[in-house]
Amino acid sequence: SDSTGDAESRLARIERLLESGEREVAPAWRRATRGEPRWAVTAVILVAVALQWMLPHRLAFHPYWALPALELVLLAGLVAANPRRVEPRTRWLRWWGLALTGVISLANGWSAVRLVAGLVNGTAATDAGPLLLTGGGIWLTNVIVFALWYWEWDRGGPMARVRGQSQYADFLFVQMQSPQTAPPDWEPAFLDYLYLSFTNSTAFSPTDVMPLSRWAKMLMMLQSSVSLATVVLVVARAV
Image (cartoon, rainbow, N blue to C red; front, side, top):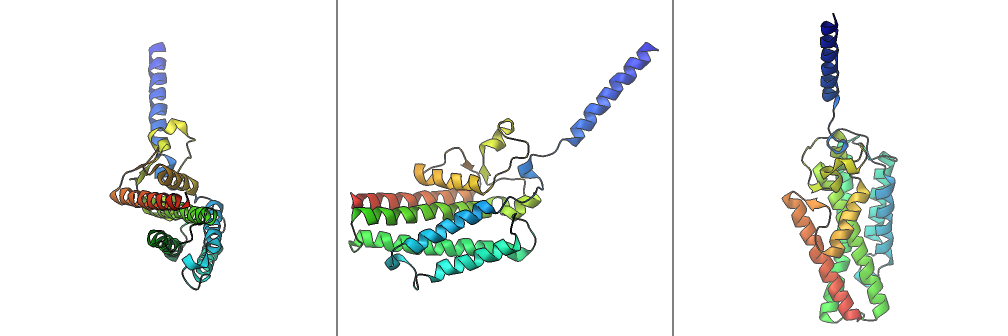
């Protein structure tokens, strides 16, 4: 009868709706996905190495070529292991990447401390042009350093994010709050963390990306403090 047919039709529609609901999946940033392309982080690390090599030798860890050369060796190992995408193949790659970030941080931190000490003690060169270039190079490398740390630690790092191991984010991006503003397969990549680091260094505070975990808040606070000290001292001496 017609009533039986209508009932069966409604039941079929309900079943289809239930099946579609079961097929709904978590957003890309919360599930296992392909690793992000390696080219962006590789290019930015090469920029950091170039900036360190261009600094005055008096500000570098001696021998001045040692740490940049070590950075290139570590980077070459990572690229050889994962030339196209950042993928979780072996555990040592995680530690290799952290070691690379640590060496870049050490080199830039050493240069920043020597520059600030020279400015405070009055022993640093005060010619405006060279001083601004030196301070700008250290400041930009600092942006790259903190971008690498954010990228390496958010939800366990890039390889853990590929597996979708952690459902709790350390940084809240706009696309996480408003999924309709981004494609369904959106997830944060290195350039997103580079933007986060740049805005934190220029605004001295979070902008549109909010830190959620305590370590993220402390790291952003440290970056803002270092950036503020560098900018204030360099500009004050240059002017």
